[in-house]
Every structure is written in C-alpha cells, then in structure tokens.
Length: 129
Image 1: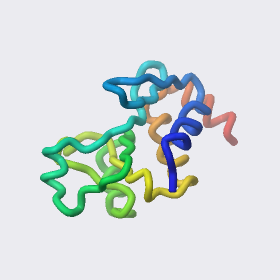
Image 2: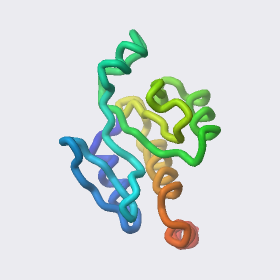
Image 3: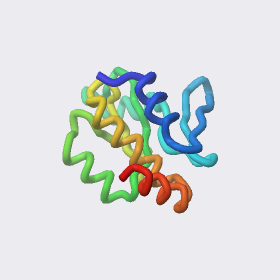
Image 4: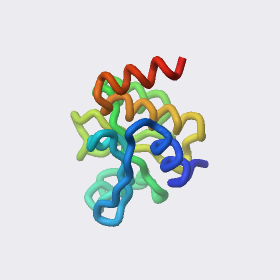
C-alpha cells in the first residue's frame, strides 16, 4: 500500500520538481506545471460514484492523453478511476491505498514526463538508460 510519503519521495526525486500546498493539499510541480496532486473527492463526485466511491487517499495524476487514461482505467479499475469532473481531461485518479509501490513510481514518473519541458524530459530519459 502506497502513502503520501511515497508520492513525495518519488516526485521530489525527479529533476526540477517542487512541492506546494494549495487549500491544505499537497501538489507536485515540474517547472511550475502540476503533474500529481492530492485529490479528495467532492460531494458531487461521491454521489456520482455511489458505492464505488473510495474512502481512502486519492492521487490525481496527469497522463499523456485521454487514450492513455482509458487504457489505465481498463487495465486496473481497482486502482484507477475517474469522475465526470475529469471527462475529456488527460488525468487519472489513483486509489493510493490500492497501488503497488513500483506502479506508483511509474504513474508519478509518467506524469512528470508529460508535464516537464521537452529538453528536461529528454535529458532525464537519456540519464535513465
């Protein structure tokens, strides 16, 4: 089971990442672009999800495009989900208590790659080989 400490450790290990609080919730940014964030459900979203609404911590994460989002939703609906608020938007919601640490690292890193400036992302990928 992953925690906010895991998210923080993974995110802040990526180049030029910062953390900030917004409305008492953590957000991680690369060059001032949000890539993962703490995202509790709003009352309207809980109502829309009904019994499927998770009650634990939820991570929001950017994805490359809506097709990537749909692939994640199909791949593991016990971990990944969305709400009508995110319809048509390239972001996924993650049940933090249900994701394995190595999968969390992939989600956070992919979100960072999507939002990082191209040169920074390319340099990171070169260094990772």
